[in-house]
Image (cartoon, rainbow, N blue to C red):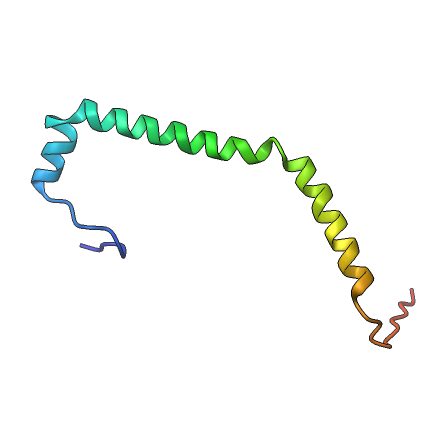
Length: 77
């Protein structure tokens, strides 16, 4: 059986506990976790526009400080 790093193997007792003995409790924990993850993903989207403007100004400032390397590229059609 292939197992990912950091993942433990599941045995019959784990399945029994998750799906039979404590199903409602585990379902509630998973629901709350999914809601928290959804909120975390929504929060940055509210400031995306402001973040892009800040990035643009940072890029422009970096361009001003880049020294001229003395190489001029001329593209001909």
